[in-house]
Length: 153
Image 1 (cartoon, one colour):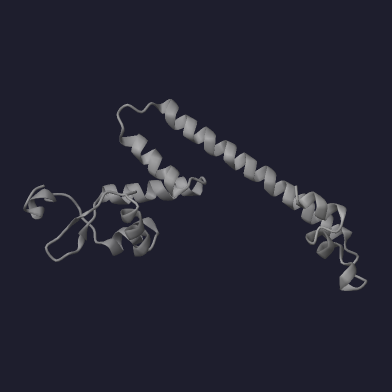
Image 2 (tube, rainbow, N blue to C red):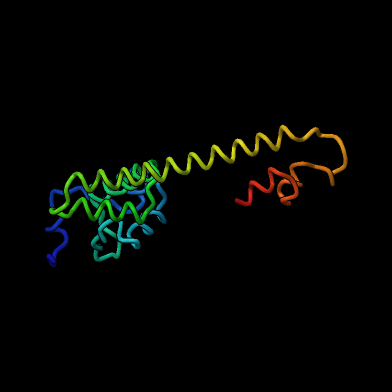
């Protein structure tokens, strides 16, 4: 490690944590959390104690946010980042990760569509009149009617 950090960062734009947070549209705690989870490289510190962030940190956080938008978990993102810097990694390995995520998302969508269909059936079964004890929605949640019995599966 270079003793004089001023020399190490000569000619490189550096940022404090607040500026990194602003440029990546996250809060400072998120930046600290990503550092703690080792999703971004641990930044050097100035003599004053302030962290020294670079454009690389900003780019890495933007990568993380884009991957999250596609449904990747932080653990999966960490794996992708590790694969990214491993010279042995091939594009096919990254494609496999994306295919696994696609399959998981497809399964979630199917489950949500089943939930939507069941909720539609429950809503349609309710006539809105009669005592609460005869409410088909409550009966289903209690497992007392056919819809409710299907929910337990």
